[in-house]
Length: 86
Figure: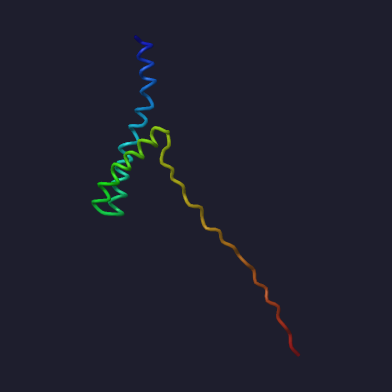
């Protein structure tokens, strides 16, 4: 009985990981849809975000927040030669 429980838990583990991504994706899709297209966008974006969140949860992909690197500043030294006229 114990071994059967361990096997069932091992099989169900990926499904629980998938379920954790669905609510977050649902909320994110609704927020982005509302921001872009108003109430209609929220209605359309919520299920799409839920599906995407579920797929990301199934694959084990989490949200990645990447900070943009600071802009590169190039300093150019300008040397002007003075021409002496006599």
